Length: 219
Image (cartoon, rainbow, N blue to C red):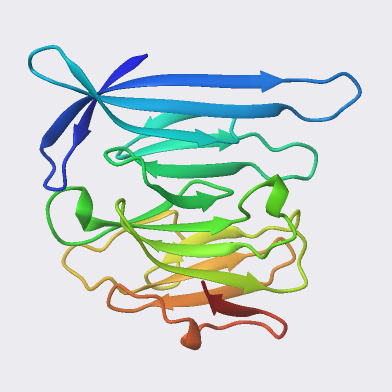
């Protein structure tokens, strides 16, 4: 168990949470990989010392950790299967982003956590590798937009994800004092790049620069 001081929307501490975490990782002789299960309960601690159950989650994951206002569950990759990160809102337990790499953060104007935006991309897990990967965009309370990427690529041929205000590829951006306008770049090892514009805090897939054979569909 661990105690967490959770931030509210304005950047002030909203609640003290007690997290009760359980992880089951089982290996089977002759089989690759690990059977995994993560279960978490979050309790709100009252000034009187009493606690009230706030949310619970169960996920196919090997480990978990608090990252800012997210609780992130990690399912380890095996062989050519990618690592899957599932991000839950720490205050509500709502599942938000699923990605195969760290979220990209874009800092905008305003105070507190709600000034940040996040970009996620990847496959949802070993049971969904036949489904196309998804691109997600929003804040740490809601996914504002989600798109599936169709192409002939297989799950083990995944791109790196970047953001760019001009031409330089970055893993984060500070756009305070400027509009939330930038480009999401998906870059494959063979040099193929997909460029998806974000204008005034919204992804515009119709303006994306995509090679032949790639397309986005709104989820």
